[in-house]
Image (tube, rainbow, N blue to C red):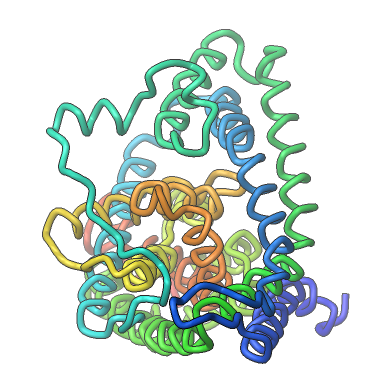
Length: 429
């Protein structure tokens, strides 16, 4: 495959989506809705294209419940062993969660200093903060639904996830991958991902219609908000690579670790940016981990697991989407309770859901259903759009970070001087 073909296969759909967004914004600005003195629309303008976007949204709403159930329950049901790699696995997951939370906190601080949306979009009802529930009520509503029928709704994503995990363990105990139900769930999950792929091909047209309607209805200034958000996100990613990564490497590998890390990290960073895929970067990460002297059993667990669970860039993205939507709907972005909730959702949707097929869209569903349940139809496509626009640098942080996190895990497994021993024995270069 030529370099041009490889780049197109990685970024072709994203380019088409961006072109659809730009064209939709242009059409919406050229043909705005005409309103009378009372603010009522008397001529629709580009809003007549709204059904193009609504079709995509409705299709995604229709597949999300069976997709979540089949993917999660199938993954749990088909596990071959519940005790994989013990200490390495536990340390790895704990590290992913901690670094994800750190990333979320950094982004929250930045969003307070530089809000992505300064003025709420016009004609959208101001958002409200729901009445606070008791801890007991919050736990019950967070984890369960009233009955089985209530699970079959996109508005009950977290209870559905909990049920899917429990169901998956039940299947695992009854034969797991060898049982008929286990095979059915795996096959259903694969089929649902094919459906997602088919629907995604329609996304450029959908985004064209959605943004044409959005700009025609709320004004061309919304494009400035997206640019403002990107101008915050992209520099942050570069700063994070050259500040947080060296700190993680120094903590994990001790003296000399930063120099070793900087000498090797360019390859996985460029590979992930060129392929826009964490999975495609696994071989490169494994190669540089071996050259660094990271214990093989550590890298063989951390790197593949990191490709699906280490998502610092996605935590950045999640907080950016939430802050952006808070601004769009005029909801105050403040309060310790709100920030803790944002951190939990960011870590869960980015770290916990990223390993699930289609987990990105599912994570955005969770985020929007938790914070914007009454404005889901508008919030969800906006969240998807931001996710697509920031995907390349987010993937670079996620993927290159897998190599860096191997340093931290190696420290807890083999001691803080593991790198010095590897250098002395000639295993590191």
